[in-house]
Length: 277
Image (tube, rainbow, N blue to C red; front, top):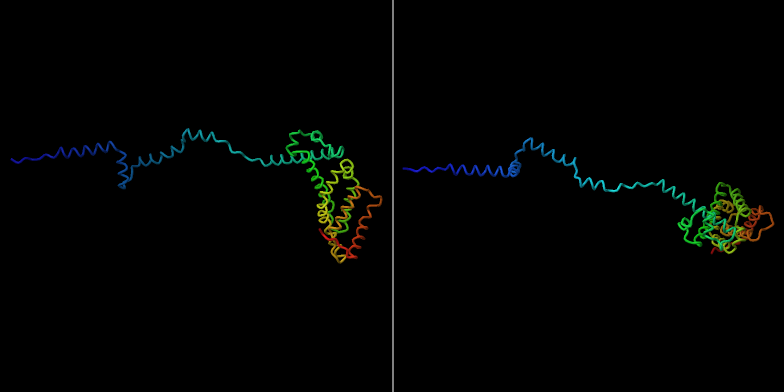
């Protein structure tokens, strides 16, 4: 009698094992489906698309806390800085004005920082914010007086293009400086300081005078058919002003332009020139 081999248990066992593996590892099955080129179901696609959107709408508490802890950006205020600069300039001007008042009263050697602060209505702390010492204050005061003199000279002569009018404007300015300026008073109360001040500004003043009188010199060069020594003429004008401060003359100073013109004509006609240093 022939025996028939029953294979059913053997066939049932692989199907049961495959099903168990599929239940135990659903993720692997999904990966295999994608790898084989099969499209995922519509529900899976919707869930996959919705998941990132939900995460973007709901940031973590740690990220929110960090964002809240960041400092707010600082916004610059240029208008406020301009006001501070203007206020500083006004404070410095008050201090320099008080310095001039005290120097003209008691001299430069006896100037007191405390007196300057009282006259300028500022505290000592405010004073030392701009000037470190008495010497630095006096140096700044000298620069201030020099710049004021030159600025007023340019303002007095610049509006006139005609050479004769510009020369008259310069002479008028020098006359007004000699009559109403405070340089002579400074020589009386602080002679050493005043002489040092004149010495420091002398060569700079020669350059400024040359600039102010350039149209006048150009016209004279054409009239006299020669090139004048402009530095010499300007130096003579400045020395004239300083000599009037030291020893005031009795003659009419309004004749200065005519006397200066005759002197220039004499110099040009005789060929006298000055060697520049």
